[in-house]
Image 1 (cartoon, chains in turn orange, yellow):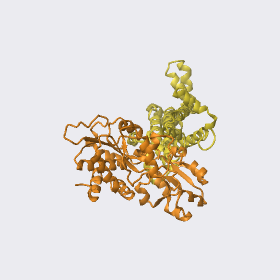
Image 2 (cartoon, rainbow over the protein chains, first blue to last red):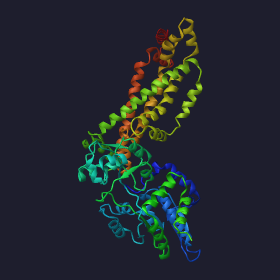
Image 3 (cartoon, rainbow over the protein chains, first blue to last red):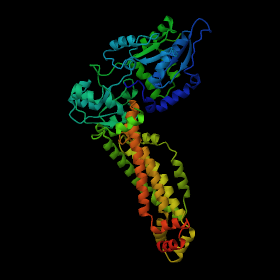
Image 4 (cartoon, each protein chain N blue to C red):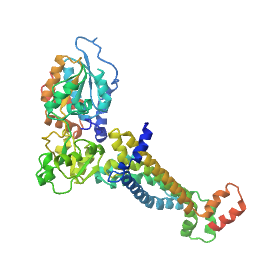
Length: 310
Length: 241
């Protein structure tokens, strides 16, 4: 993943704008102002942040409502752009809870990090986090890069994992953002690591959004980089190829918390993440993309149906 | 080294030429897109502009098309691409929408600016409507039409950088890739090439303008400067009569 959510603002502009309107009440608070005075009783006010990426905002809203339910005061600082923008704020202790993607965060903190299994990435991340920050247990849900093809293409060439792309006898045109060509998991890696012949590259700069999906469905491109939690994969009959060799960094949703998040609050977040499976995340995203529901509505319904609200 | 010097250095690095992502290839695509767009826009806008200018009816079309300029081209292009798919069609249609108003206004204004007395005189000497259009209005309107084409060309060359968003190539490649990988020298190099193309287009149209505008019209313009009025007015009469 280039940085989780990078450029997706463009692709999902409408959704994000919708979320922004829905959350405008909260957004009026200065996201960068220091908060969390302890005056209002025993429990601290916690600042929950999110990326400018609709799916991330939904997860942040779930965290926020779960914490509120447990008696914490919560200030929401949602839609704070990309990792380059918000990471310094987290490091400075100005945000207390942030739903992150462990592989992408690890790569942001350590450019030379090696990939690997989810567990390995999580372990490596814990060693790289700045002092004062903690990575809680990752959810099973991940939103990461994938090499995705249509179901018809997968069936025709019996494709299951990335390596099986070698079976393909027709030309493979890869579509995606320009920078995909320069990524360590890009078309060049497919050629050098797996010996897959890539016939060309077509730039579609919406980060796996609707244009990319359409190009794939229309067979203008055969292989695209689409995030695994994208509901378009299901609704357009696409197949994200398995990645047994860890070409992509696993990107499980992992709350990054500050010292102000005490053990009880951590338990609340752990309880949420324990329920957040891959299918749950996709269906949460689908409620936003396909059903156009607002993040607070989606969050409340999900928490209620999972018995996480008292 | 400052970023500007790095951008220039990027531009002159031989490794950045040749192949699908070479500067030369991308310039070729960029020019191709711009020329196609201008040609289509001209074929649409010039006859319509002339018709409105000659008949004086439908001026509202010129006004409305001027308003169309406010359409965000990126949004329009994505909207079209969601229907026709990625490739050349979506950007070409979106850029034609961008280019038409300038050309239409130029064509219309060129006719509209012709002195009514000149047209009356042409009619009085027995010219048909067609002759008035082809021998009076078109030649006299050429400077303004060329102005419209010139500004349309400038807009299209600058905006054609968006084409790479939907896989149509062009110099936008360096801007998108540079932005997303924080390779600012590359972005700057791409921008410099776009600026050079734009300047080249200005120069080309300046030359074209001199070539296509009849001597009499140019003479008329110079006559406005009150230099050697008699000699010019003689030529002016022969050219327009």
